[in-house]
Image 1 (cartoon, rainbow, N blue to C red):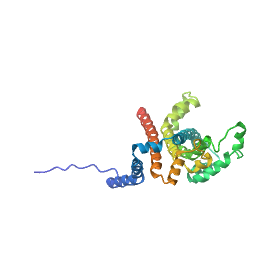
Image 2: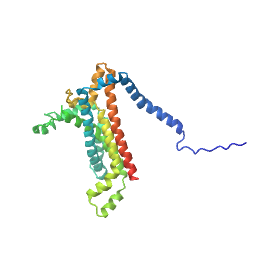
Image 3: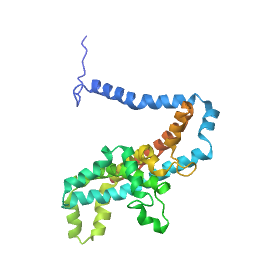
Image 4: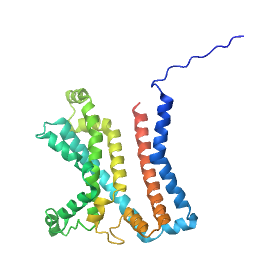
Length: 278
């Protein structure tokens, strides 16, 4: 009696099983296990204790400011990042290397330094603050200051996400549209933007995720006024300083849940867009 042995197709990557195991283990150590510990620690309060920890006008006002300012900043970053990436990729810009380094500066700059610099610029007697003060606009130590700080730290994510797509885009499509009589606005709206939409959504998601978790640059420019310019990470740190670890993790689970929902929605939009293009 003979047994036939079915030959398996060779794996695309040698040692795939080992590399997959290492990858999953590493992701579990740096992401899954810490997040699970966060949820478990918050669950130790019980349902009623968790509700008491995350309820209150001060908490919800801080959540509204954190997520509202993050969404506004991510939208501003998406618009500005598209323009900056377009100029750097499609034009001969003098001192291009310098501008590339300047785009990446928020990556390397300590957030506390960024916060101090932005505050010095936007206080009423600062270089930029004195320009808007006559109109009654207050940037530093007010809600607009939070948006300014979050826009500053999120912009590089959008630019660096869009740039590779623009550089690899087929310019022949734009030339064909131009030869058929399309105006520059039509070329941008009907040819360029559809191909950039996944990159725009990804850049928006990265900028938003970065903004939601920002702390160092915001606490300097916002003034930390209770019920007005307090962000949720500041309340979390305040509870940690009071040794209320369970209460701090309860607030953290709220931010985790909202962030996961928004990022999942963006992923769903991207997936639907890719399906529609097939």
